[in-house]
Amino acid sequence: MCSPESGDERGPSPGRRNRGGCRTPEPLPCCRPVKHRLLISLIAAVTVAAPALATAARPVVLVQAGHVSPGEPGYLAQTGASGGPFGGESAFTTRLRKDVIAQLTALGVDARPLNARVEPLGVAGATFVSLHHDSAGGAAAVGRAVTGGGENWYHGEGFGTASQTPYGDSGAHRTPATTVSATVERRSTSLARRIATRLGAIHTARNGAHASFSGLVPRNSNPRMNHFYGYYRTNADARVLVEAGAAGTDNVFLAKTSLIAHAITQAIADDLRARGLR
Image (cartoon, rainbow, N blue to C red; front, side, top):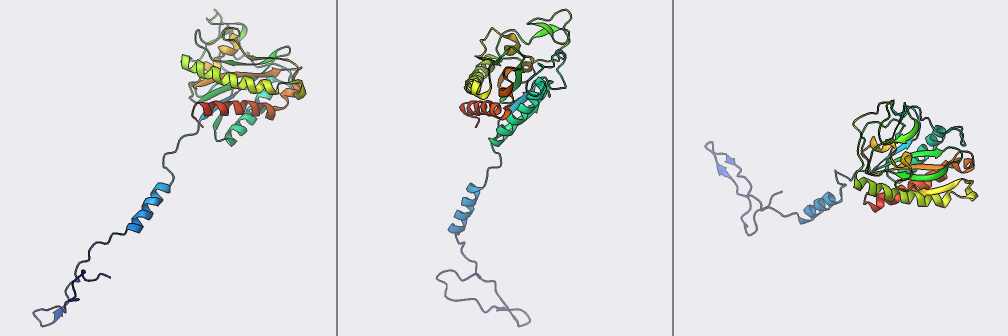
């Protein structure tokens, strides 16, 4: 209820008579505004403690299972190496992609699956990683996007030697292709080094690996890994390709997809953290 102003001891007025002789009550005197400091403080505290409406987005990592259908135009004949612990490269990359995505998701990363045909064309993200294993007699290695030239061209839909310029019979490529800047190369190289370090630590005879381990592929030595078409179908800030091992000699190792995924996932997480994205 409203009380008289401080200092007014008269109390409520008995009212005034109207023309009929009846008394009509007068309105109560106005109260001075009371400052509810405690209430204001509580409201302010709740406002500050409430979650922000716009939270930082989780980093997007694009995880490609190499050679998994549908294929990429211009490379449709490249269906992957035969052999391996699951009967073919695409069977291996499908399993490895599943494990990588699960482990990245558990770390709070927005991990998204891709097949050989990168969709949507030009998809953005913090990181693009393409998963593979080499053919018999090959090696474990890590490649990354580099500047200069562009994607590889082959005869028909992926036959013969990789070339930086089209052959007369090269299959058509999707356009527009994305580009690799110096910044993308720098970020890609940093990530590739991290993956090579962690993959090399587990690619051991104790884990069933007996093929050679090449580590980070030199910049100008392997166009199949350093000018891989997938780098030119995404706008990811870092782009790498992982050959986890060689079919046959590394079959026991390649069967350990969770172990391999852990090495790749931790390297990606370290890289995102170094870039201030985690």
